[in-house]
Image (cartoon, rainbow, N blue to C red):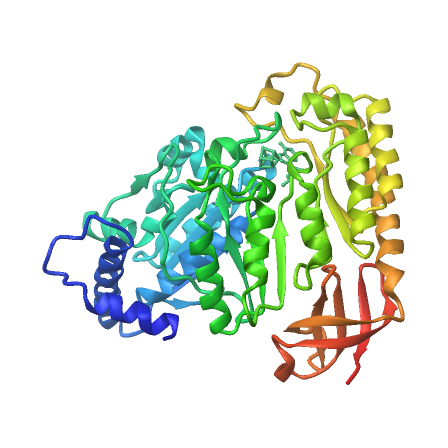
Length: 486
Ligand code: 5AD
Ligand code: SF4
């Protein structure tokens, strides 16, 4: 039975004349049904369908959470659009770096003007930024037009919170400090019919000294492997061929389960799912990357040839200050082991410049590691001071002009290497998952290689979601132009 039908049958059994059930997910089914009624009434009153828009900031975890939020909005009757003039706008926020916060405040100002012209519009804010008490304080003081504020731990309650807002007519705020709860079987709306993110765990226990994530996403919790496999099996039955397993540190998956299981163990279970073609995952912490995982990747025909392995810094001294639990030598050794086991693996990374106390020598070590590893691509970040993290309290913050100078030098190096590394498959014929009609030319399609690089080639939308062999004719920096080989 398809997911949609199963969900409708569960909703049919709900009686709105009774009290809401105490257990999940039934309780949320109750509120979804209740909200449907409210949306229907308002829609009738206005003589048109109500619209909703979800705006996502930040990482893939947030993107996945947004699919869940959108799924609920769609289930309660909103037409989903990509336009902030909608009747319901939700911002799923990020707070990993300060500039993400500033962007949210800026855009909220613009939303207020839209709301003045459309008074029944509802504005909701959720995600990592809302877990910071000083943010919520600021919103309460200066952004009274916001209708609903909740955090990262209770997004499953979205329908219930909307119902509370409808009933009370007032700003609703519901932020939890932490949770050990994982609610299964809620609706979600996939951005692509053929690929999907899957949460395998939530939260992070690592407390890297610069990072706010453990404070806003809470302690590490792994989902039960049976629930994960069941979710993927259902998705595959619904047309999904590629999954991206998501967690802040997937390599420590399963440690706190009643029956512990390793991440490699989980991968082996997922590999068995018939009809699933590709498995991706992110993010891997170098300190927990096991030999078993390397072996599993080597022997797998489905796990993609890509590993995102954040380096953060190439100086062992700074890595210690960052609380990363590995040295430069250990990182390099890990890269060697990965490349000998899986020679065609693509390695990508994250690097922070300007961590407090970083000297020119430390920075040169980072450059050295970059040259030695030759990453396929790297995300480079300027250190951002996050209140409440240990690094924010350090008094040796690096002057801005030095940070900028180092950042520019790093970026140049990373890009040059990335260009050379990306071109190494020129002339090869490789399988590509067709993902989109090309942005610039309707007669072209855009697909993704196992190593995560994009390829553009002549084709038609009938190919969407299929895996085809493409001749990689020319590398244009960070992507290929190619042609299908039949
Ligand atoms: N400043 C700059 N970059 C950061 N990251 C995490 N916290 C910070 C911070 N305070 C980067 C790390 C991480 C990526 C998701 O964001 O490189 O891997
Ligand atoms: Fe932040 Fe470190 Fe956890 Fe990644 S592993 S989310 S960088 S604390």
